[in-house]
Length: 295
Image (cartoon, rainbow, N blue to C red; front, side, top):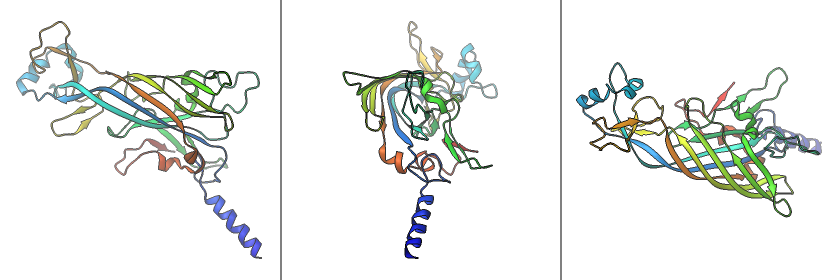
């Protein structure tokens, strides 16, 4: 009887252990793999130029200003200055699978090359850099699932180069163009780097290197708010060959995107791979800012 009680307790605790990709059915330990991702960029951000109503009215007559008018008026002008931005995210696989990139699974003898899911966010600006991750509750006999938002549920296809090299093939080379959030058109990131391979677990230990990007600059208003919808206050640069008379004097032109340069890394997280829960790993708040979508 005692043995039966112990067995029942163990069974209950196993079922209660929600795994990374299925937090309802469990149990954990089905080979999920999670990698922490980080980008650190030096870029530009907009600062309110505090133009007068008369200055804004004059600038509003320029052709480039038409798309920024609100009720026929220009809401403001933001000049660009140096800034830093940090993006955090994850790459994950929902079953025991090798992390394969360039043409996954086509190599002779290739095994366990599974889909790679991905999500990336900018916590400070409170916005997604990638599509939102999606959670589907169990229904009709199908288990629950976590996947990246399409097409970030097959992020392996965004690795133009991903392979092992070196004498014993224990080093990793990567070139990645992450899937971006369609709500912020024109944004793109290019990342190249090198790292090491864990032969025993068939996982990337770490990859790091340099990254360049084009990003919609966040704009800090006089009230201290951060506007990151890319549509309110235009960010401007001065013309290269005109005399600069001031940001409110029409000697500038709006730029929807700003250059970014920095570093990036991917690191295998053994603890989150074994015991992580995506609803706790992904950031979200009670105000409706969610980096994933429940279905």
